[in-house]
Image (tube, rainbow, N blue to C red; front, side, top):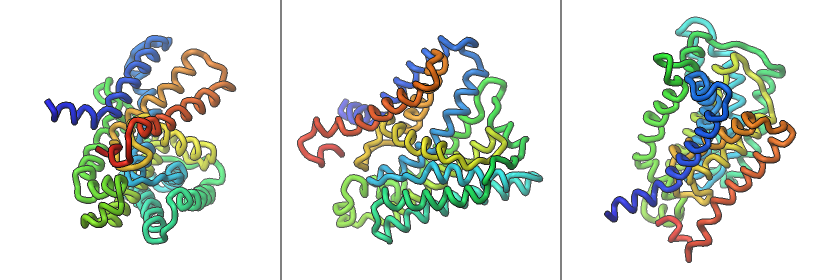
Length: 326
């Protein structure tokens, strides 16, 4: 019984985000003119997985008690890069995909190296690198353009068996192949330990620096996967500064909605995914109910503020910082 209660307490944020998403998605499909159909689910999924990948990238850094304000710019940079490289024959396309993912990992590794070995605060370091990444994206695509392998794009944005969105399947595969092994590894546990109490983890012999470096590198990989999917959805690359900033801010809201503590050491990428799905559904609801476009940023800003504030409410219920991680 006590094990069940511990599991429930540990997964509370994920379960809450899942519940919020389900309720809002039911409201959305109920009021959608087409109702609950495979096409409606596919469209919603294709938009939501973009934020889900960026939210996963943010989660990997946040659990180390950091914050990454460059994930949106890595997202844009890899989108622009993919519009140049993910073209041609199947072999050329595969090489292009590998190059884009490697570029994302390199961006994340640069962030990690600056934070860990340069001793800079994550928020300062990632603001600076975000500007660099955006500048490179702008050089690659000063104007929207490019292309992508349409066969691969259609396969990953369509429906499997005419029902299941392929983008959701791809998202689940990334969770199983990347997040789950990392979460259960020594480096994954080290990342959580660093977020809980870096000094205590260091004195316990936990490989703090390697764990944090791995978290930042995988964060870049997640953002790059999101950039790839953006290219698959749009068939083009665009260095849209406003879009990069929006995805960065929305990723923070998503991780908090998903039960990830902004103080580090607590949460899950799965919870962040449901937080992203819930946050994206909010935008769909505003569209379905025909809310004036001028009011939409206001409501999304309020929701973002509330989401971030939720992360601080738990501190009012504990007597000291140690209890927050128990």
